[in-house]
Image (cartoon, helix red, strand yellow):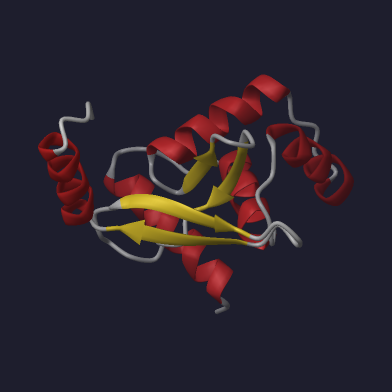
Length: 134
């Protein structure tokens, strides 16, 4: 079994444990993001589904799917570009820290890093000591 198959199986198990379903269309969107080497917008996902999968997805459906996947911590939204990327921690049963994304300006490759909650607490404490609003 390849890595992507095992990630999908883990995502299905996670959803099942939450009393939710990873439907076919949700799985297609997640698979697309897992295969992609870069973050994709909702409209790029729609284009991919049409050209590569022969599926027609409506924009509102894709946004709802992305909202679901984000709510289940399977994808992340990059607010700076309004694009989405598969979570690098799908295969782990762990609490997510604060995700930080390193984005290459030349090739758009994205690496997900997790900032431990203790680091955020220290930053907030330092800001309070300096009388900076958090």
